[in-house]
Length: 125
Image (tube, rainbow, N blue to C red; front, side):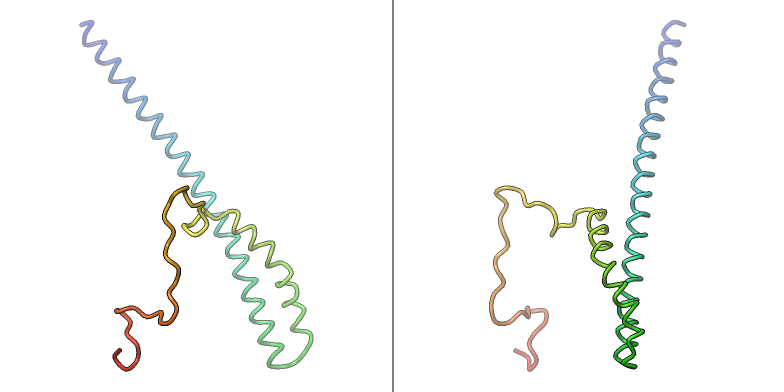
């Protein structure tokens, strides 16, 4: 009877440990999801600013009216700060990650053609 009680207590303790681990994982996932939402929000603001830039520029080019330049100037002034914010909030990408010491560098681009054997030059060569 004592052995059965000990095994039951061990089973309950193991189940409790698994539950605690699952709760910790869920909290970490929730933080990541919240951060992703914030990054998407900043990216959406930045996208709207780019659309404002394009629309105002297009309006000015077509009409030559100065009134179209005000939204262009506003979006142009706000763009660098929003871009920096997005860059700071975004996770590092391979091009932004620090390079490990002693890692091989890629070869420099070759001069001349940039086409590969999968994208032949026009004319078949």
